[in-house]
Amino acid sequence: LRGEVEFENVTFQYNGNEADPVLRGINLKVQPGETIAILGSTGSGKSTLVNLIPRFYEASQGRVLIDGKDVRDFTHESLLTHFGIALQETVLFSGTIRDNIRYGKPQASDEDVIAAAKAAQAHEFIESLPNGYDTPVEQRGANLSGGQKQRIAIARALLVKPRILILDDSTSAVDVDTEAHIQDALQDLMRGRTSFVIAQRISTVLSADRIIVMDNGQIAAIGSHSELIQSSPIYREIYDSQLGNGGKNS
Image 1 (cartoon, rainbow, N blue to C red):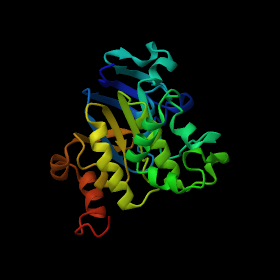
Image 2 (cartoon, rainbow, N blue to C red):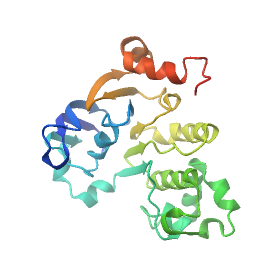
Image 3 (cartoon, rainbow, N blue to C red):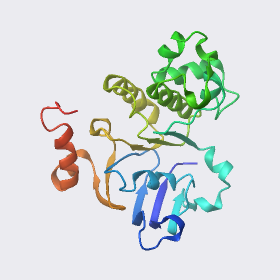
Image 4 (cartoon, one colour):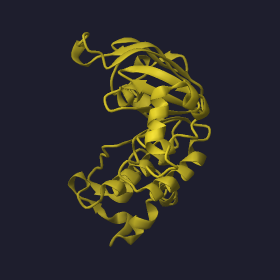
């Protein structure tokens, strides 16, 4: 898989509700290895957009293509082997922390597990637990904080060395300093991989190759930070609200 992703006039609505589509007329071509950041208000369609790529949802109209091939022509199992995915609502499974990181690649060595955890800024807190990587995960991860669960999910996504990486607000529960360390590590790990990054903090997406601004289920603007700060009122408003005052509101 090269990792080219294309949306061809994609519309999506839940349960055939044509009167209120979640996405409308999406056209987008992403080159292999490109990092795409996605911004927009709650309900603008950000998560739905990326969920169409691994076929968690299927387009109501239009096509989603990977390397020129309709995603519906892949088996779901074969498609998912090329993805690393970390979502805001982290799903952890019964077993140890090591098992959870290794979930997508059961044959991974302990060294690989630790390397992925370090990249996700998870190694230090895991080592501080009574049983380290062998600490059992309680139901729904009740013995871990939200930020800890997100870092384990990021480590799991990175371990499989995916062709396509999807991070859906996956650092929302960590503090700003930890997020900055994770972003530094991700810069190296995303190189050469097609990456989609949904974030609430605009500071985390400034270095993306292109930034997509979603509004009411459509792409309202697309470009680099320097382009959008000049051309997109929505982007400028988001930027000013968070970083415009000398960064004091970040």
